[in-house]
Length: 341
Image 1 (cartoon, helix red, strand yellow):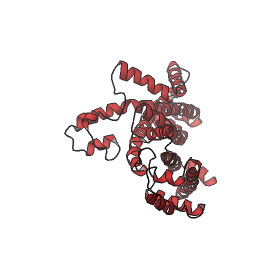
Image 2 (spheres, rainbow, N blue to C red):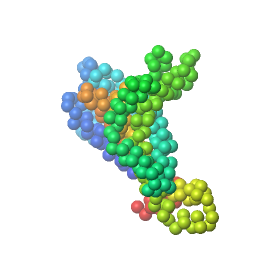
Image 3 (cartoon, helix red, strand yellow):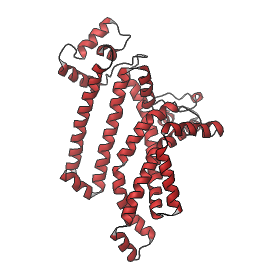
C-alpha cells in the first residue's frame, strides 16, 4: 500500500509542477505588463520597482519562475486589477464557500445515486428500472444553467419555498470569518443562531440540489451497469443456491463488488461538481470561488483568472489522487493493478 501512496503522490507532485508552469506562463500570455498584473493598476512607481525586483524580472525566466513559486508558497498572489484586494485573502474567504456547497452536493449524490442504481439493477427491465433509467438519462442531458433557472422559477418564484440567491438573509449580520456560512454561524456570538442556521440551510438547499444532479445521475448509471455485471457472476448464483436471502446476497456480495468500479468514478463526479459550480454560484449569487472567477473573466481581471484556475485544477488533481488511494486501500485487486503499472 505504501508503494501505491508514494506512486500517486509522486504523480501528483509532477502534475502540480507542470500545472505551475502553465500558470506561470499565463503571466506572459495575458495582455499588459506582467508586473502591473501582479502588483495592481493602482501601484505607485516605488511599489512597481519593488515588485519588479522581488519577482525576479531582473533575471532570466528561470529566476522569475523560482520567484513565482516562492510568492505562491508565501501566499503573495498579487492583487485584483478591479478593486485592488489581495487575491490570497479573497481566496481564503471564497474557497471555503465553494467547498461547502461542493462537498454537501457530493454527499447528496452519494446518498441518492448508488442506491437508485442498485435498485434499478435489481429490477432490470421492469417499470421501476425504466423510470430510474429515464430520470438518469434526462438529468444527464439537462444543462446545469437551465436546471438552475427552472428550479429558481418553480421553487423560489412560483411556490416561494426557498430564497432565490445568496448565503443568508443580510439582516442576520453574520461576520464572514471562515468563508463557510454554516461554520460562521456556529462560531458567531449571535443570539439567533438557530434561526440563522435554518435560513442558511434554506439558501443552501436549491444550489446544492441543482449542483448534485449531474454527479447523481452519473453515479446512477455507473452503479446500475456495475450491479448488472455483478448479478451475473457465478458467486451470486451460488449464494442464492446456498439459501441466502436477497438481503444477505445484496449486503455481503452485490453491493461491495458493485462499488469497486463506482469508487473510481468519484473523482469524475467531483470534477463535474467543480465544473458546474462555476455556473451554479453565478446564477445563485453564491459568494464562492466559481462566482468570483466567472466575474473576473468578464472583467478581464487576469491575476484572479490565473490563480483561480490554478486552485480549481489543483483541487481536481488532488481529488483524483485521493480516489485512487481510497480504491487501492479498499480493494486489494486494484492495488495489484497499480503495482503492475
